[in-house]
Length: 308
Image (tube, rainbow, N blue to C red; front, side, top):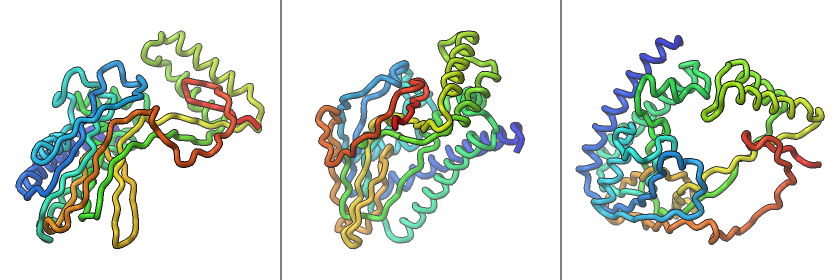
């Protein structure tokens, strides 16, 4: 697909996504609400996207307030729809759940609507990250040139619809991504950045090129058998734990958006837990395996070398 075709597909798909999200609002507003509980998290302001967040205070909304907040959240695709002080580089999260009463036929219609919306969301991600042919470091500029103010994090995030489980509990996940990488692969990526002639934000072109050259030299000086790992912290995020008693099964889901839970009637209403405030100093680890000895190599890339 050519860049021109990808741009056309991008505009067409986002228009259809906006339309289908508006159409979803009607049944979500009209169906009887059995229970609703969402948890509003503090905004991340511009320029503070990378600041540590050792504590997060949660504000709970229930019943119709929760439903209204959930509907607004599902339709939030552009920065113009939110506060001008809120960062567009940080995910807007609204954990929680709304439980709706629906007949089998209405529930099936709702499933099909959500399925189509999620297909459009995945299509948007495919166009932006693959079909456009745009390098990762150029995607932000590409997207905002075509669709000013689009919040790709919100666009990519799918909607989760569930048949009534027995309970939904909420909590926090705080982890790190650890991935093995090869020295040659990293050198190749750095060379591509160097040859592009562009600079990173806050750097002059000359200083950025000098920095890349230094990083390449560090990698080239490593022994051939060096074991490299990227260890990158993932910002704490809300999760939902779904319990199904008939299967004796618990499923843990990321919960950046309210879950839509379908019940035949009030007798199927699941137990909804609360999301408490987050405090990293109050975390109790049930099991914490001994970490491997890693030496920091290139902090900017979260790159470490394994010590034998």
